[in-house]
Image (cartoon, rainbow, N blue to C red; front, side):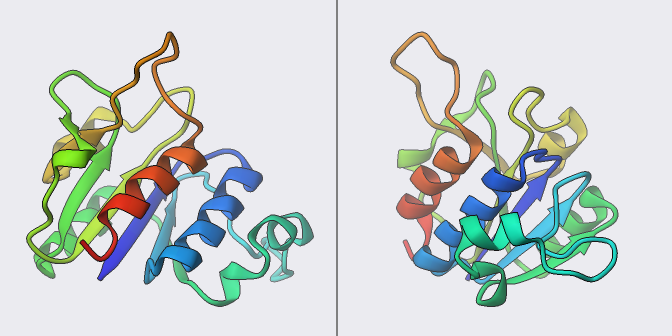
Length: 154
């Protein structure tokens, strides 16, 4: 089983793109936290822009909103799931070398700020995509696709 946590991702397009990729790769559930946009607005209406990008994947991938990301991570860990922070920080492990022992949860954060240090510290491991060019990271939806395509079902 693979889960994903999207924390403080501002862009509705990136979030919806991750839903579409998650559906294609078989990610079972996405947990949204912080200010990450939900597929449904505060009035209970489906967001048209979300559905246009996700192609309706919010209907095929289970999702939920978590008020406290740290508590949610701890609950997921208590269920025996290995939680991997996906963040290009010093000491992070190359994602290509990760060999999950079982179920995993991939945690992604905002593009400008990344994951908060307390979220990173709560996770079991920090992984990254080694960058070869001048840019230090990829778009979050692209990074999700690269990492999830490699680790889901591994």
